[in-house]
Image (cartoon, rainbow, N blue to C red):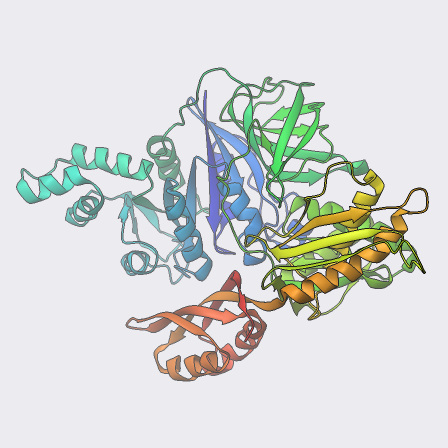
Length: 619
């Protein structure tokens, strides 16, 4: 039995979960079709997912086709949960990118395709909802070639598209397909140019090879609800997605791509294995890369091990996914066997909010719950704030609504969220150093010597503390007091924003036994650190969003004028027969205004999408 791990990706509401249900039903994994509207689908098993009808967390389910087990990873479609999607991409053998035959290519679809092509992940395109009024075929294929990628070859077509009678029919590899293949396959190009013309078998072999290396994408039409075209898609998955080749026996090597909390704080980690074997009760050591470049370890026994799609099967073998319980402190992104830089990189959240418990006696429980939830998404940082509240980073307002419902339903905590605000940051502009010695004579405010150097760290490194003093020169408690105080102090920089991407080095230290205490170092460190940071200087950075906006032809001028007034930097403006597509970068603090004003500027016809894309020095 071979295993393929396939991701189902799409813009929200394109029908991902419905397609997953259909694949599981047709594959015999479930005995009836669930419905998103009814809230009884297999993969959207959370109460909030069922209530809202959206996928929030990646879920795994399996079915078999002949000697192939297909693990389906159903991912969120809403951009607020893009971190969940990008984590799943790392463990896939292939993907199905879903489009609606009615709505067509949407903004999130474009982002996903760019990422899939960058990773060269074998990807099939499935055009859903062919039986819906307004569904299109040739016009949609033209949009796909223009707005997604020109390197697509349709393998099925549709008869009576846009009606309840819509049926999928095979589509031959015609001259258009041959021309597309010639653009990505040198053998086909040589045959087209020099002759004789490539045979259909040669074209199909080239299509298989170029799909496998991620340079070409077969297109299938169908309906997840009605079942049309799904069998052809499954046949394409098994035939066109290459079966991974794994090395021989060795030490286990894998990646944790999802973590789910359980009762009593127990965690279930979903591990994709690449090499070796994992058995129940085996002791495992997971590695993770910290901000300062060091590698941390988390160890424990796999007290529970359930291989997806193979109930009762042990051990976990390469290519398969298992739910593992018993390793305390395990987090998303942890590696078994080695640490790699293979994971996709994506921007941190650009919004922040403050969360308070509606009932003060629940303040401590709220903080614990938010820290546990943040562990599921390492970019959603939670930290203590003033008056018992908790500061939280977010991608968007939908994520805030989901967190509020999760706290109420899973933890019994009623939480109040302050309005979201854009998160500005400070970074050191240069290097600064300061120190304070113990005054052996006269009044001593602090019985401590502390010298600190502040300098910029690599972008994205967060905060790093290190030392040049001799190891053991200070008692461990004093050293820890300095380090903890450095990070706590830099939560607010000289310009009132959190400081990030810094490297603070302890360059001088001393104490007077038995008088000195950890409190002396906690008191003196902020004074020395602020003086060093003042000498280094800081710059304020504001987050930016990449945006795409689709406009009716007569709305280009007012919309671009508004964007320009907000400081947008335009990248590309392309026009078609019915609409303009404008792309660029915009300060995050103006995104909400554009979302609110766009309907009025475009008579309700404009379509807006944006996502965090890093930050720049604030103007």
